[in-house]
Image 1 (cartoon, rainbow, N blue to C red):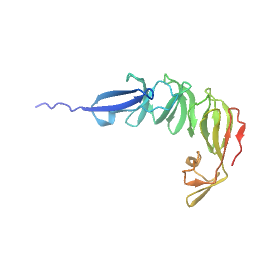
Image 2 (cartoon, one colour):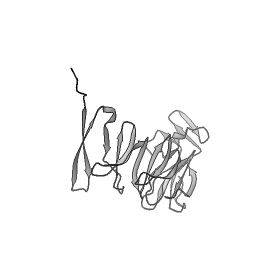
Image 3 (cartoon, rainbow, N blue to C red):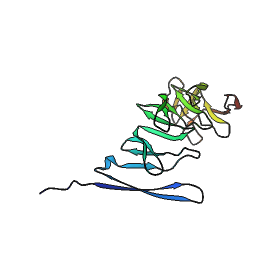
Image 4 (cartoon, one colour):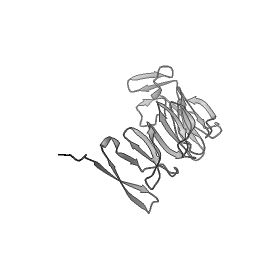
Length: 208
């Protein structure tokens, strides 16, 4: 007797915030032969992000439009939203940037990076952070141990020679690369000095 091949229907309901007054509820039903091929959507975008939504199938990420059509097939290890027409994407443990067609615009060469908010993006090269423009050119050279995205014309940065993380003391030479990021007050690491800079790299607030 022939047995019918089982199929799994994954129904994913998510909410897209269009405005404070209006929410659209979208139901995406994906029929797949196994859970490993199911498509999951991240409907929560940052304020000011572009029109595409993040999605992932298995361990790979891609993008779709608001109708549910896949625009950039899942192929990345991780990704961010589109800003200034570019989104950060991760492949082979390096970050780069693509445009809304999926074309690689800035090569995979960063240990980590942020979004292009206000025209610049923070990027990590080795143990230092700097800022690039959408062409990939450094506007502010790597020199910080942590760097945040711009907001209202200023970006927060962190510098340190030594930090204390719980019971461990780390130096710029011995600290693992994953410790080079913004250590906010809730962090278990202490010892960093913070300041703010403008789009030209001028220090707008003293390091303290």
